[in-house]
Amino acid sequence: MKDITGLMIYYYFVCKRKLWYFCNNISMEQNSELVALGKIIDKSSYKREEKGILIDNTINIDFIKDKAVLHEIKKSKSIEEAGIWQIKYYMYYLNKRGIENISAEIDYPLLKETKTISLEENDKIFLDEVIKEIQKIISEDKVPNISKNNICKKCSYHDLCYI
Ligand code: SF4
Image (cartoon, rainbow, N blue to C red; front, top):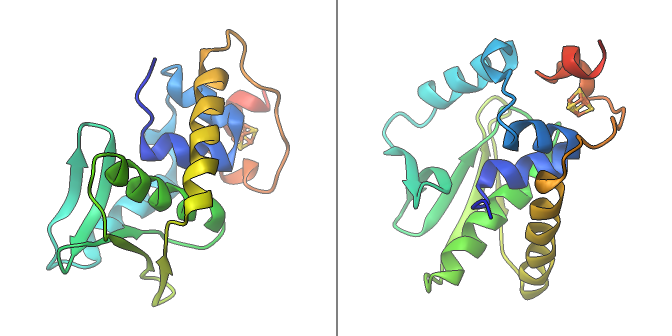
């Protein structure tokens, strides 16, 4: 069974097909201009913070401030739900390992906005189910069907889905 990373949680909410491609080692991200933009924002935002904190090779927190506030940097709110569940998963993951009293924020530097995120008891139950479903999706032999949506045009897998 694969360890579930924060990016896998993110892709689960963005598109199940994208999740399958990614977990089955089909990568086209390096060609995406949007990914390049994300990396530039990552590098230039919050310069004073220690960034890219990788825990257990599984969750990669953008930075931690004031000891217990996790931060995730996003360039836009276009797939906001996915970003919210990604950072909730970081809290869930740390909770499972006995680390409590942490809070989280999503930073949108281009919008100059910050959103506070909390992890509720029912979120933990929901994430248990999401994890099971991710394991099921990624172990299938066949890629999930295309679910046409407005992010397809910007997706790095677009050419693969719409040949
Ligand atoms: S192009 Fe659309 S359907 Fe294909 S992986 Fe990307 S988001 Fe999913």
